[in-house]
Image (cartoon, rainbow, N blue to C red; front, side):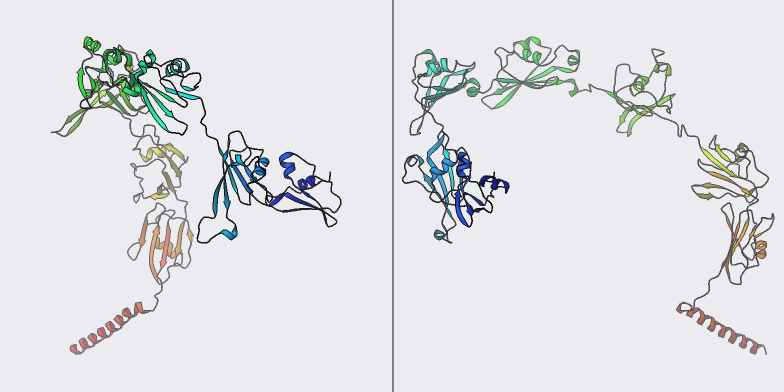
Length: 630
């Protein structure tokens, strides 16, 4: 199995830059064989393949040349040619030329050799056309190819002998043999199977092309040819054209548009009347069409050849005799109208607010309020079902009004179908707007939380917007023995709501909101002293004791005090001063704030100087006063 082909296959094949035409086999440093792989590739011939021995060397040199073959050939590719190989060899390697290849027109684009190139010229290729037919059977004058050549083979012309063709308004247009159909009448009646309807009989054209490619043109009367009065002999490559009436005179069409039809165009038929086209295009007897069409006017637009414009004629759908005796012409345009040009054919009412499907609904005859609400899907659960608001269009430019409001009761029995007519019938008109309302917070049940010194702390639902505190306390079992009103407060959104409880009475009409927390203060809550006291302390609350008592019990204040404040559990605060000694309730915090030390610097220089000068002046005035008294 150790052959040259197997060795090349095992090595991955020859690269595109390597040669396929000159593979060398060396044995013991001697060339023993040169193999041309084209014999195997193009012909399947393996006679040159040899068996290899141990230490044999296969050498694949660089590609000898690259010649591109394209066009009308069996296998377009880039081929490798040996020196002195020619076009004949190239076509052989490509499998030969197909039958429709042009041998007289083979173009070869060649790169100029290096020595012939001129830097002043921008063209480094030149084109050569070779007549291969004159050299393919000759061993002389073969056209040799070189590296970089691009060979393109042209296709033969598609023209053929003994041919005539016919196109246009015939049953079987196409190409026919001249020897079978030598005259025009035979070609039309037999070859093309006769004429189509609407053929223009006054003209038939023949386009002729002679052997040199010269064009000529002849025209005949088609009627004379078909009747046999004129005989026209055909020649090779004649092309006959038969015309239709549409091509000569234009398409014979009429159109209808407007209400009930959209836009419709049809071919004109002989003796087609205005009524015929309308009846074919719309549902003429349909009740909806009859109720909405503008029967008093339809327009017929007829083209005026002299002016190039359309003339307008008015008709009435009620005058059927005139419509049936008015016959259509080519390019006629009919337009139907609807009564909506002067009136609203689709009146509506609107239902908004607390209904399931608010929107706009078509108005019907004797439509009541309840009917419109049913069209809107009925009431929502939260809706006010006893009455609705109706706004009726009442535009007055002078008074500046837009509508008139009416409040109307709803008959639920009629709504549910328990009676045929509402007790208070309210007939709707176009553009009426029905508003269904609902009370504020219809399904809302406010809840608060009660904590602190009550017997049963927990949630309480508020029965009304104004509920007395005493009733809330009753709902949680009343106060415990340790309650303290002055320390009670309401917490809302994380902040304490201040309650004025100086008299020990909880305001019975406090406005509570859902989510509030009512905290009842406790006598057991400690009193704290903090800040600049000698001994910050926690005390049990003693009834009647005031702030200065607890400060003294904490060892008193430091000498330099900025302020003393009492922060009560209910969120209020009081200042302690020489004249003020506020009451202390459970949970209060007494905060003594020390005065910060002064920092010497430029900021205090003015004050120091002012004090020193003021002291000198005061001393001087005192001395003068004493002297005057002596």
